[in-house]
Length: 301
Image (cartoon, rainbow, N blue to C red; front, side, top):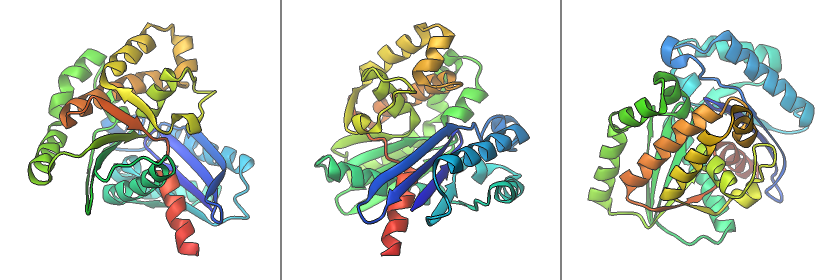
């Protein structure tokens, strides 16, 4: 089973053996789908070309012909005015047909993958909040013992980084940008009670966890990332560390063209700690692509 997640910043591909549920192959590439989207409302030609090129590269690494394929895309394509023509062009040039999924569906499938991983880690908590900080949106998923309530917000690392010129201006703007999230969290805690733990997935949390473990973008190892604990105060430490590096070293540490986005992401992440009243968070690498694959595997049985 092959699953593809075309996000606002990254194209992620995973191949899973449905019998053993083991990952047999994976591929990831920064494609910056949402580059310029905040200003124009459109996905531009350069971004489309990057996506097409990345899919072709993934096909060289993974044999797409011998497996069932499910491809989904999220906020950037969801909100772009030219999404239909972009997806048509991608289909024409790669043969891959993407389905635009809603924020709710994205949250549901991400939760499926994260729960699957938490079980493997023997992580015991019936109630937790899962946050998924993406390029164009952030999902907040409250998992109570008998109920899951999620909401998607159009605040992401690409859109925020491209809407403000400096980290200072991002920091000043975030309370306003994240006000709806704040109100949603307050409403959840008020009506359902506080959750026991805080879990995070997606590029920003996993990158900070990788820095903590001494990994770079090239040596990134998801197996070691899963279950890593991050304290709120460590975010300041790793943000300072990232910003103090010369540009070339920064690119090596977190990936080409990602450092400004990760810095913006850390500020969003930090705000979420405060909002959710937690000092510590558990980081999980698995996300939407794994959720898509797990669900598709179960429908094949």
